[in-house]
Length: 587
Ligand code: ASP
Image (cartoon, rainbow, N blue to C red; front, side, top):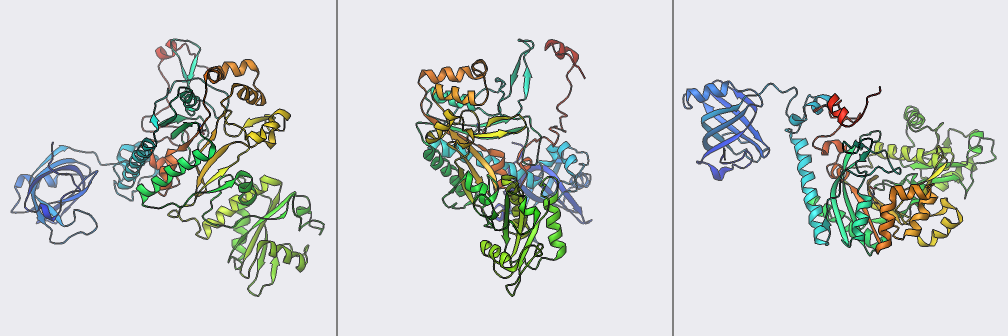
């Protein structure tokens, strides 16, 4: 070893010892008579000290020539510090240097390697290896490492076996867009990178592995957002001879194990909510239940407190729905206008926002009180359970579309009112997802989860009758703080039912055979009932780390255009490679 200790371990008990440390120069302070150097490595910072008249001329000269981020080795004696630094674990001591050697000089880094840096996103991505030297970024990756260790430990204790599945697989039409890889040995043919190991893990169940998991890279060629990356990591799991309840229990156990071991938090038992309930009361299939503010319907299939009073906007809408922002009745005109602008943004797309204030004296004021009598407003206020000081915010439109808009407003109000504390965790399952969703553009039904998800037995009749919208699936998502961190389903394991499912999705027999023949064949050789799920590992890490961005928890992430700006990928390949692959460029 080039060193006797790392930079995070010296304490008062080491005083008097001769030590050799290595690391990067964080900063030097030269006060003439004394020079101090903060020496950094992954483990921490230790202060080196040299004194005019006591340290050798050579050591003083070398130290004076050091720049930021030089890599050095230094030998000296551990001494107690006169002025201690209680902010760092090594702050009681410093090392009085006898010899110091530059192992490698460094160019001035393009941004400060400090917790708070002056480097913008692009620059830090280009020099990611320097960004990774910064404490906050490194700590994120250490957190990720610990999480992966705990995932393995828990699943191993539950008899799961980690199996690697292939990365060069077959392109399939369902789901997101595939990344494809041309095959040199089979010109004109392509592999696809897996969007998930779904079919392989099901085949492992047919093989009798019983319990499988894998911490695995998956690839989806989708447009990117802050919480998406073209390649990302899943904790992928599958179990045999189980029902939905077993899967929910076991993976609730995993998440609670992670909270306990990583954060020291005893997560309460996860509550459950049906998809239908989530949509009706939160306008989202992943409600943030750290706070209430559930939707109240003034007009829907079940109630109508708004029609026939001459307000054409509400009369023309099938749904009028709102939230009660408690204690916000004193919002100024400007604040309400801001909220109106917020819901009118194209990403949300509401036409306008109606409010109802319940004043301190209990009287009601609304932006549309010229249409509605005080009695009308009173019935609304009662529906909202309004108390003096409350502000009701109301949107209208068509069914789930209006509800989804109100979901955005609910979350915005949650933010404004400080109800979404990242250090508070509310975890729950959303269950009973629909099996299918209708794609207006393509005018056909799509599998809401994926085509291998089994319908609830009692709803299979609707598969026969063609009532696809009514079929519920044995599918579930785990949601924490409004983030979908995992999801899965009980699978179809009978060939006939799987064939019916493909038919419902518009596959011809030949197409189904061509795409998924291997799975249907396997189902004929003794497939056990099975089910499972996958967690978004990057997302869980960012949630545990208190950040919205999964990028901060990936060592070498891609930017918003799917580029790795450090290695400059994707990039063109040379003509010889193109020839070998029999690919012609047509631009
Ligand atoms: N393969 C699914 C996904 O990636 C998860 C599952 O059903 O297990 O979403």
